Image 1: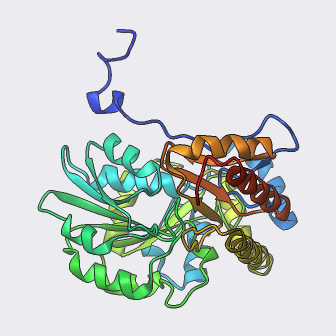
Image 2: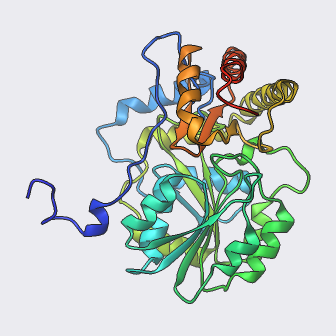
Length: 361
């Protein structure tokens, strides 16, 4: 009885654990493990949070009316096609709970966001993991071929976490035309604000033609509200209606709702911070190329190193230089792009990694 086997489903007991990014013990350590923005909360958002803190004896607006209205105005999308949740990860969980049947399948790219297979298994489904291409991109042809009569949903992640490449609008449009309209397609756009490429995905355009599509966004990344947990989805009215039916009552807390509204009103400052990170990304990638490293073309605020079984060695070298990175077993290491100081420490760790003669680039 101690292992809980009499209480929980077998598939719950075998769920893999989500591994959060580590925070170093030394206060000088720079955390580059969780793709957080390096900037403090904007003053105007802090003011809104402080003002809202006096009413926490009351339940939040269950319908998140003001927040949905603000999102609708920002995206020029109808309120009826917007759902909000306790972070976009919570929305992923709710979507899968709503559509997955016991033993059914969900097609996902792999490696991708670590929460996908956990949420699929928790919902009683089976993750069909379609390997990425060698350069860290979705293999959309293989994903389309993996769809069967047992498929209940398809997940896309653009830019892909943890490798970084983004899908193009043309690629996603062609893929959606191959997916049966009876199968929901979840487009996870957590890092969309950092995309700077030709033919970027314009999800509202795709949503107008595909009622089975839902595009997920978050306030945790570009908006810097990771500590409050708030995300949303744009979709068709029928899809949104079904997701609201399964939503957790009062699922988005009052402070998160108020802060998210304030964040949407703070576009000039948010965009300026995003541009700063993009500039740091460009500088870092130039430095990586100068050192001779070949990495996937990231459109996000992180970079992927496919170090394989030497990933632990690099994680330790990073810690020695004063940075924490996110290691994915023996697959590779993801490093957030943030402060210039962090980039310099990363470059030193990479030089040490190479000079150790334990790795041949």
